[in-house]
Image 1 (spheres, helix red, strand yellow):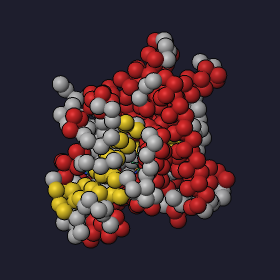
Image 2 (spheres, helix red, strand yellow; image 1 turned 90 degrees about the horizontal axis):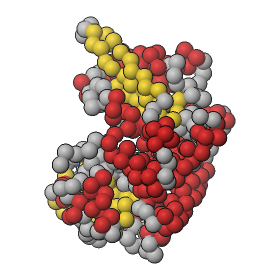
Image 3 (cartoon, protein in one colour; image 1 turned 30 degrees about the vertical axis):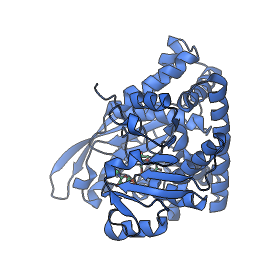
Image 4 (cartoon, helix red, strand yellow; image 1 turned 45 degrees about the horizontal axis):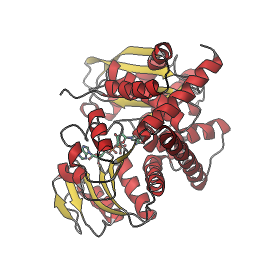
Length: 412
Ligand code: NAD
């Protein structure tokens, strides 16, 4: 069976929830069609004097609940369809955690590894020139995504401010020294662990003493591991592009992060045994956290998953077919649109701080994140129980309900 792309998968989950809600085809079409799709050509003078033209995108899916919000990715796979799917996911994600934003996504079709730092900076600034009319602190607020980082956000802030005047709130995920928020870097991983703690509690279990396997040991994976240990869990296996390591007694996470810094990956971490990176998904543990790529749990391997709980830290790690297999096996899947929403939640706090011109302490950021994740989980669990649906369908029902009501109240 051909694998579904992100666009088809999102639409499928959307339609399942829409059907249960008896939305009707007109509202369904309204809520699944992006409001605006911008596609721009960015001619760039390369360091060697040649000119190359790149294609940039910004898709604004829905702004019923507030300004559009969503990341920018620099990747060769970026195209209209992928960006549109990710934009709609942002609409549902911001609605699930009830922050006053809509959904958008954008990016440039480029392999940034082939560009110099100076070329990436020029490309970013020209992209901002092209989309300046459709972004803004009250219109659409980009953020980092695949292959973009705090430095890229700093350039966006600077370029936009040159065009429109000082505007730190035009973009989030900025460096902490330049209007970024404390706690933003850790936010997604921290949110993933709060989600884990809450789902275990709802299942009558405890995060304390629970075991976790984490696929992907980058930003999200390392912070999930660190905060997991802080909350009393044992991280028994981690993997990244270099391989996987396990220690049934618990991996020393801090030492492992240091090992990655020194060697570039988790492989050969002393105090744990190496094993095949592809096998991490089948670990015997309480919680499996895919925190690397999309589509990793699919029709070929879903029946081999042994963890009773899967918390989706990555975007779209489970394909719809695999999702149904896991459900049939009684495995509880905490969906990405809730589980990894800690990042966009703290992006919202960054935006608030920029508008207030007042910097919060990290403890305030974490307290607000905690409350947002816990309250959202309570609603999620309640809807799941009441409707007798999966957590994913419950998340879509909540999100579609909130977006739909806002759209109707504002007037179609
Ligand atoms: P990252 O680039 O910092 O880390 C990715 C990690 O995955 C690296 O350790 C890499 O080695 C590993 N990896 C890559 N291919 C792998 C493979 N085949 N097998 C095992 N590991 C592999 O990225 P990140 O920011 O941590 O994002 C991870 C996931 O979380 C992505 O799906 C991203 O879309 C999602 N996400 C991130 C954020 C955020 O705030 N960073 C927010 C929401 C969702």
